[in-house]
Image (cartoon, rainbow over all chains, first blue to last red; front, side):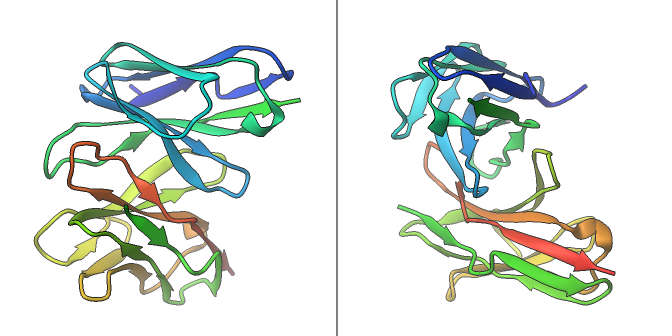
Length: 114
Length: 114
């Protein structure tokens, strides 16, 4: 009964590969996010979808492409992986609306590019 | 644009001592304020939040934070810490517009020693 679940938890891959991280939430939320946590633990938003519509697209290389097949899923596909992509990627969800903006986070996916 | 400053990267403290983790923010609009906690190798969990109303908010495990609009601060306090409180603490803001994205501070590592 995990609220926000991400797979895989760990991902080790070589430079140049293409990989995907999946995220699912069972909270009935209408908004989902991807955040990146770098080696210094700094967290920064990458993307956000509301009802399958992209509403936030921060300055992220276009090798990163999010896809939301439905409100409960937000996947992240990364092409041509680079060493600098190594980080922990967190999926989160919330319900859009005044007074109810708490975001619930997944356990994270630790991506290591070698 | 919003920003969050957590001046202390690490706060060492002895068990049962009081602690304050500082958070200051800047924003030209009204904001929601949050404290998240990250235990080692885990995701982020919401500790407490300020949306409106009473400026003093409390968590179930003894933490509290006070929203001070004039000083643009949202410091986190606990009168007596436990070893199990050792974790990374992140302050975050979300403005009251349509995006609801979280802007995080750089985090403060609370290290509780016996």
